[in-house]
Length: 70
Image (cartoon, rainbow, N blue to C red; front, side):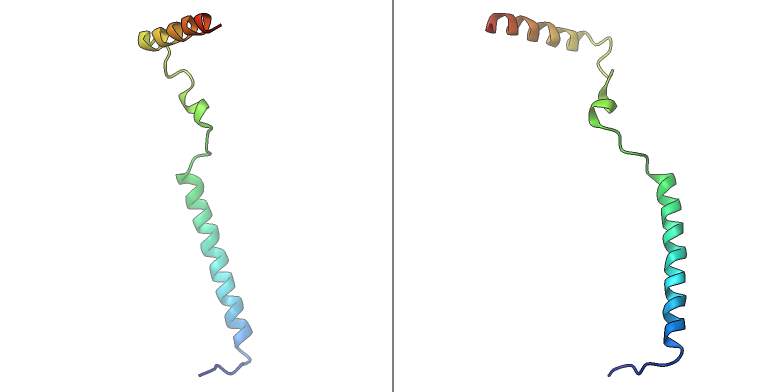
């Protein structure tokens, strides 16, 4: 069964497009408030080991290992 073109069909399509544009605008507004801009992983963890004695030990052991590997 095929639909016959009618005079109202372009208006119906325009109304649907207008409706979709409104919904898309609303979705974009919601997403803008829910999501935050992505931050690179290294910026998210920068400073997370500040004043961490275990991490300081890891750094020291790495430096010692590099000196012996030369």
